[in-house]
Image 1 (cartoon, helix red, strand yellow):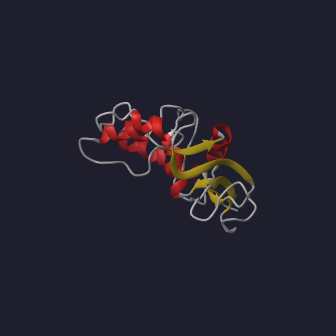
Image 2 (tube, one colour):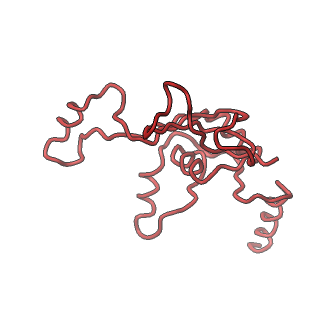
Length: 164
């Protein structure tokens, strides 16, 4: 069966409530329901921006000063991922959903799916990606090819013939 990395809503008493979503980043079979029992939980995601731990609302407002963004504490979305397990499952062939692909590209595990165009491309990529992880040793396949790794090998051979 096809394995997918996707989001599943947390249903615990301390987890998600109405209008306060919290998600687990899970590995599940592609045909199972969103909130069914996953094969493995790889991390959590809180899409509501919050202040970092250790800062209060008054501190965040007082650092703003003249209304500029310098020194101002920004609210951040909380993403926690078990990087080793995520790399393993991506290497094995698990296919991330679009949202999980975006989250994993933010922390540097996957290349961005949709690249910005124009003069600001390099600055936009630096702003989006956190310099925490490298992609060394991870093979990423976007398509759901039936032949698996053979497709990647064929593509490399064709590219080598075209280049040489």
